[in-house]
Length: 468
Image 1: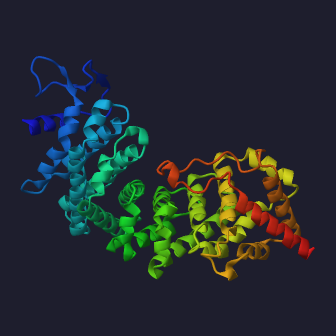
Image 2 (image 1 turned 60 degrees about the vertical axis):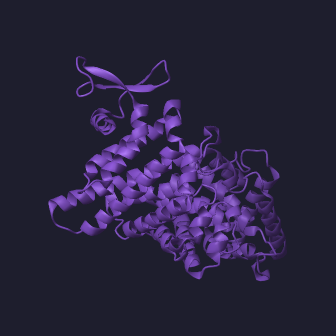
Image 3 (image 1 turned 30 degrees about the vertical axis):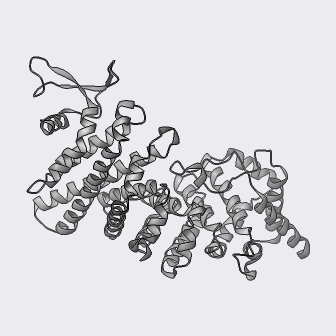
């Protein structure tokens, strides 16, 4: 039977098996022949058969009477991730995983396993028996695997050349979308409360990375904003608490995943996600808490010179997004300006900064580029959206936080050099690529557009002329 063959293959197949491409286009692996064919030691098996039947087989196994063996489910999910990972390079596998019916089976399986896993962990956590502890352990293994499957397929579909939107379309079906949002919010909220444990952190990272990928599907952020779980602040509260609890100057996978998830939700202005959040006092409070923590991180990194890590790049990417929103611009100005101004003040001549900049590691250069862009975004004033008292707030804050007049003058020379020499390496360096999980149209403002930044430099020069 199909189920018997799938069971046999799952017991024998491994991700390290070399692939064999047959003349008929099929992709096969060599596995021990025991139980499959007599008289030979090994046999080539078409893995597209396994890919085609695996989701339905595991779902049937989960629905059978009695407690499912989660070690078996985890093994099957790990193989499913391997198969999904082959889709970008193996047309035979891609043909299977882009089929709408297959994606429906896989999406239903993922949601079912997540729900069952969360229920098991919730019911049995704290139970002292060895059997219960093992069940929790295996449930904790299954949940991240489910989100890794979603992330793998959705990110693959976000590449236009792959010509596939099947999983994205399936996840956006109203009933399934509502359930997916519910289990994601429940999972984040539940695990965030005990995020000191390594296995829990691993689960949180997987959930956040899955959320980040799905947030790039057109329409998902709006659906999330309209959902009761998000409107009540549960998801945003969980993300903000993770950032505050785990984001330090030292790299952290969990903090980085939370920052990227927030950025994916808020970076697309067309979706007006931050506008909806800004209109809700409870949700705004969570974002402001994130701003306050990011400002502390940026200042600590500046004092320690701890710029060369991916987490601090994510910190400044999110600050740039928040700086460009009228709801949160003032909070960024009040809390981040001092750090920004100190970053632009260097001892000695302006030439020292050029030498420092050109010799800096890649991440450090990226952070300075993002800092320039944050200044440009903060200096923008839209009379239709902003209050009159917010005009030139950044400029005033800049002078209040500059160490000395001489330092302010040094900063002015540096910024003027950047503006006047747009073609030299000191000017905004080659444009930063958008984060890999974002489509080009969802990336933040173009780094080559420095008009708002130039406006700040002009205002700074005028102010310095008056005080001198």
